[in-house]
Image 1 (cartoon, one colour):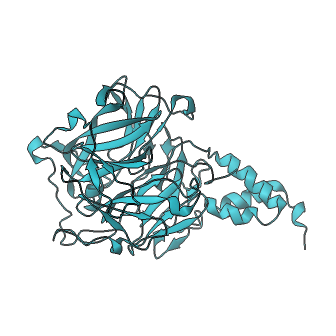
Image 2: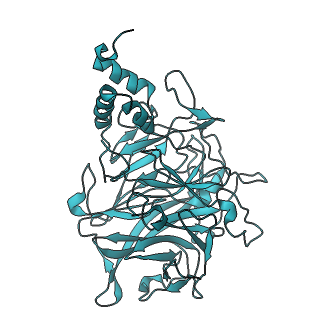
Image 3: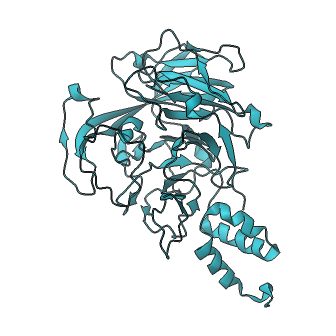
Length: 442
């Protein structure tokens, strides 16, 4: 038998590149011997996955072929692609492109949130879990079925029942896994539940008596959860260790939040300060096929109207095929403006802000986060909002994602494309994820 040490390193690298395409599979490969460890280390450095730099998790491969060697289970691809610093990049369909390493994340599991390298996932069987796609670590959460039942006859419990989730800390950053709390917005959108990692059931959070609309985003800021609804009103949560924690209206309220229509809002911390971001969208009727059928504007009065796919049953699954062939007309939302407000704690009021003091903010299905001016790298620029398509309800109706993602320059009030792709399917939606200490080690 030949001595493995005599096999050229270039051949080992080729084997690693062609046969072990999923990042988490590098861990057992590197544990075989010192030689394989050094080869794995060398290859992972070539992948160029820097810590603390945001990247996008895109759809991975969808078919098993001799050239892609994709792992599948019951037709569900077990990979998505991690695209580091994607600004201006062409996201090509070839999953073996070295710049786009594969993550072991099933397509049909919905990602309801991400925070510092961790994902909050909902499986088709309604189980929920935290997953670190860089290390393969997985931590179970209470299932969707342990949430309170739907309060409306038109809402059914499915893997779409959980709309978005946020975390207090990540398991890798806390002194104990049990220090990690997860908060979830679910159902029709006007209810919030939480759990401590290790719990078997979700606990319902008592609503504020002054709630103005559906809860849509939140942040863990200065040891407390803050929640914003679709009218821009902000609520602060009692300590989750309380017997019956509830949401209470936060003062001062944003003066711009006194509006009679709903929009998308985010809360984000930047430079230690709390910001509220308003994402204004317009709606058009369009087609969701690979062919461009054109679009026509609709009146403001029709905003919020949707047309389903014509069937009796709404679908819970993404279309994973490279060619998305549904040609049904849908209501498609696109962002046309961002406004930002900063909490001036010394004067106890919100003020319109023009920028993030040189920092950049990332919003979407992820837990909104900022990167300071001093930490920006890899093509990202300051005073910009990098956003992805997170219109959960349209996607549930079968509208293809990816219509509404880009970059907004605050100083120039200008929109730019985030990236481009030759894939004819953008499902499941792209999600921001940031490898951090403890999630991926070179």
